[in-house]
Structures are given as structure tokens and as C-alpha cells.
Amino acid sequence: MKHRYLRSVTGDVDSQSLGLILPHEHIFTDLRGPRASDYGQADYHDVVKLIKPYLDAAHKAGVSAIFECTPVGVGRNVTILRNLARETPIKIIAPTGVYKEEYHPDKYLGFDEDELAAVFIKEIVEGVDGTNVCAGFIKLAVSGDGPTDIEARNLKAAVKASMETGAAIAVHTESGAIAFQEINIFEHAQLPLNRFVWVHASIEPDFNYHVKAAEKGIYIEYDTINRSNPIELDIILENTLRMIGEGFAQNLLLSHDAGWYSPGDPGGVSLTYNVRGYSDLVETFIPMLKARGVEAETVDLITHQNPIRAFGLYK
Ligand SMILES: [Zn+2]
Image (cartoon, rainbow, N blue to C red; front, side, top):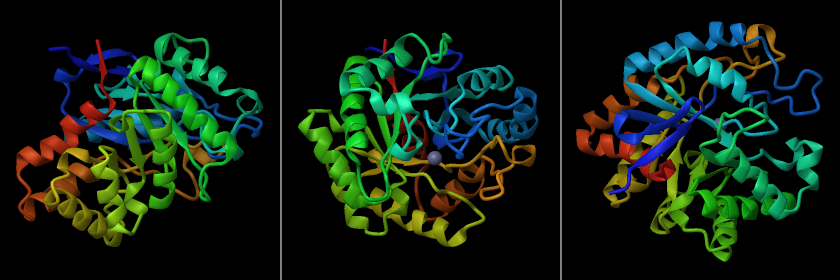
């Protein structure tokens, strides 16, 4: 049987060597966008100082790999990620792809679909920004009113890159209605829908959307786990139990959307988001699942096997 592997910023990792995987986190993110004068830049030592303690805590909690979900437009910096990855046993996977249209650098507005697909493919197979650090998945974001023309182009380019490389496409999606607009585009382009991860599905209140999307084979990501928000945590708990109960455990992904170093803020600490660690899933949420009768096998399926099946590439 062929082995699946994850393409991390320090090289390919055999999935058999991995344990618990967090499919949606941030380490270094610049929400000021590409027009900020010092966009996406920071002293690497400052990033280590702020973030490494959180990675150490996550490692101690059993986290083996983190998908860093910051694409072009909101500060992706693979050099910083690679240097940080050398200081932790946790594998870090960085994306190709680009954030919402309003965050596009000018050249990304000018690409046609094939040119953009070629950029995505190059970043997955050769490297990003002139380095040999390769991207391991495709991360896009769609605006809150649904895909703009440019964002629809991004989705179609991602399909071409996914078909060529096998990489998964994770899309920041703010509602179930938008998820189905994305599905429509993907179905037209004949993407196998098990390559699509619905990012932020946890914020869609209508559970029917979760089920309908899972029925299509999509990955449903509940990625807003945060123990300091018990109301949200409880909604995610109930929806997770319902999805397991409906037979869709194999479609679920769990993560925190936590982090991150924010260039431009004092000490890298975002005034809006502060900094959050990556351990609530292990320390708080999994114990809640177990207390409600979820078996260790199912927890392993959701937190280990699913991320590998969703994002893994084949040798
Ligand atoms: Zn995120």
C-alpha cells in the first residue's frame, strides 16, 4: 500500500510517525494586509520568544503536527516557519494559496486561472518565495458575501493544482450557504470532494448544512475550539456528538484557529486577538468528548487519521 505523507516546512513526513494533528492553527499572521509598509516581516527571535512556549506546551500535550493556515495576503512567511520548526519536534505544514480578494497583492489580482494554478503547483513541488520550503496544502478564503469573481478564479485554480499534486484545498468559509457555492464550483471543475476542507464550519449555526456537506464527502472543520469561550465550546461539543451519532466521524476535523505572532503589534501580541495556545483540544475538549461516551478509537479517528486522510499526499 502506498504511504501517505505530509509535506512540512522541513521536509516530507511519513504519516505513520505522527500522532495527534491540528489541522487549523496560526503561528505568524499579519492581518494588516500586503499594503502595510513592513508587511509580513519580524525579527525571527521575537517570534520564537513569543510562540515557542505554546509549541512546547502543545508538544507536551501530544500534538505532533500543526497546519499553519496563513496564506498569501495575511503574512505567510515560510522562512520564519522553517526556522521555528527547527526548534520544536512539532511538524509545521505551510500553505500555498491566497486570502480574500481585498487582501490580494496586486500581482495576484492580475493572474489568470492557469497562471495562478501554476503558482500554486510551483509552491507545492519546488518551493515558496525563492526558498526550497514547499507548501503542503492549498488555503483560500472567500469573502463574507460569497465568492467574488477573483475568489471564484482562485477556487478553480486550486482545483487544477489539487488535481496535479494531490494537495487538499482548505477554504475559509463563513456560512453553509457559501460552502455550497464553493461545492458547486468544485463539482463543475470535477474536484473529488474529499479534497475539500470546509474551514470554520463550526460558525454555521444550521447543523443541516454540516450533514449535507458531509454526505458529499467533504471534511467539516470545527476549528474554533477555545476553552475561554464555554458557550462556543458547548455548541462544538454537541455538534461533534451529533456528527458522530449520524455516522460522519470520518468527516470531522478539530482545531483551535489559535496563535499567533502579529507583526506591527507591540511584542507581536495582537490587540484584538491576543495570543492563544494550542492545547485546549487535548486538555479540555477531548476529556469532554470522553465524558460523553466517545471512545478513544473515535477520538483517534478524528484527531489523527482524519487529518492524514484529508491532507496527506501519496509517494
Ligand atoms: Zn484561521
